[in-house]
Image (cartoon, rainbow, N blue to C red; front, side):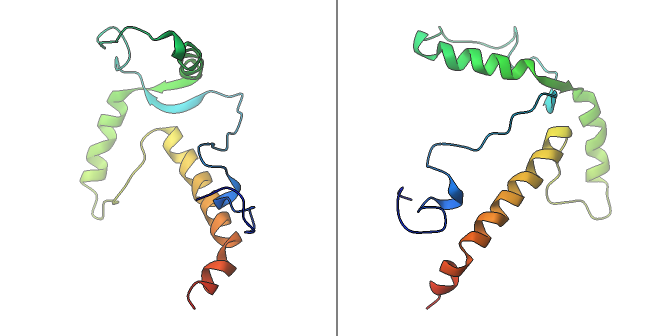
Length: 124
């Protein structure tokens, strides 16, 4: 989509410019990641590129806010999903997965409501 225009969000779907995301600042720790060695000593890292130093530092600061979950707890939960009489098509494990999707879905519903009139007109 192009910027500009005359839609309810100034031509930007959902009131966002391409390449930019809405962010919410939180002071609490974020859960959802698991305490594995994914990025630790067993990982193979390439030589750092100085141009990415800022991004690497920001990612490190974000990772420091994560409340890492126990992978074994996720492993114990999976059989309950698999063995359920009617298992869900999708399931979130960890706290972050249960917090983020409702917010994302609410944002989508809001965007669709803002553009509903245009959407109906597009039917012809």
